[in-house]
Image (cartoon, rainbow, N blue to C red; front, side, top):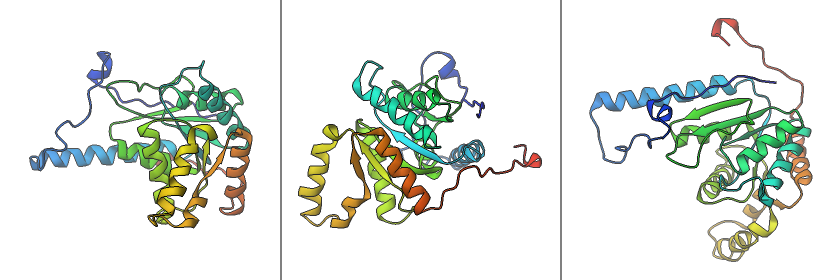
Length: 255
């Protein structure tokens, strides 16, 4: 199991609070050196993410709310999802925070599966959960999103708010537009997602804003085992996933 941990150290974090990064990012052009420094920061985040996640194995990313505690039924469902994905041979990747993200990472740890967290610096709600073998903390949302998508053979979406919906529809859009391959997307928690799927069918499809076949881009279930089996089947059949293949580390790259 991977036991590497990486965090961003900042004076804001050490002081016990976090400041939103780049508050001037919407103010238009900045001094050229300032813009160049921002580019280097973005490049450094991508490089660090690629290096740290290069050897994590076949991942499935689990999205969900940060606001559910362990007494909540959705938290318990998320923990079961993490465990079933781990049993299926996947590394479980989440946004690394509390709530359902914690639950999925915890479920993976319950069965001895690798557990990854891609954390984000926010002024509230977001702090790394203790169930991750690898934690990467990002300054930029878009870099974090790339990491959550790049290394995954599938996506499981549990109940959540704006952030979860953003991640769900970005993943589906990338698949719909063939920017990424047709990876499986599973919505878990049928009662939570019923009205959303009804809206997709009664409005988006009926008004022609998406095609009828786009409804097949996601699967809905209440069963964590079914979700894991669905993703595993597509990963094996469509993408030829084989377990046990390991990338070799290159010492001259300090891996």
